[in-house]
Image (cartoon, rainbow, N blue to C red; front, top):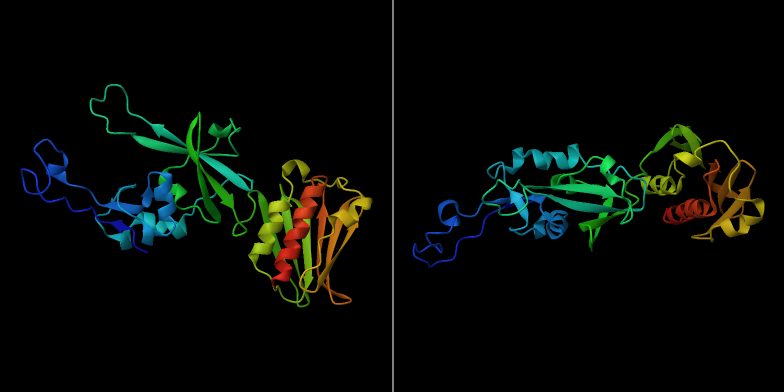
Length: 296
């Protein structure tokens, strides 16, 4: 993965024959090499996702003299990935410039940046979270970089959550037996969903992550009556897919979604408990089961 961005050569010409005049600061120091893991704007962050397309100009300077093998930023990509500590399908990252004091005579730009993770343009309580630096934004895994964003408060960009990561605050545990496996989903240590299926797991982590995205937050993680009613069973039933049919049973304290292949071969059973399971969340969990079971 190329991350060392060599500085461009100075154009020929000028009084010194190297493109510089006596008043140019670059005549004494030249351009500095940059690192593709140190973006300084949205376009550079996009390039940092695949550094083969990274170009000099939008990144911070190289701090390890081109020794990429021993670079701490490169090691941090795998060893210290950045976690988005917000349970939302998308987040808005606001970019705040930090400027030097008024006593600075020469100011060529911001002295630094703070990146704030918010739930959207209307979120005003984001400053109680820890801000990022740009290098941390380049280490976010499981979220796709969305479009840039600008409003009266400043610049920012969107991050879109994918099924490569579970929902923040939802713990997933797995237990296996010779004939079946069981996945439990807990929020605030309270179980809100249980996925049970026979034989070995034929699905990937994407199914578990997608179900966790549908799970309710802490307010709905309880042992109270579910929010949906029995007459909504048809509305909550996913469409057949890949030879698999689905059946939904709504009880006072739980909702069961069964996936049946053929006449009686039950592939999986998803049980949802707690008052936080609204119509939209049950439908999202059922659609996740339908999508990922059909692919396997």
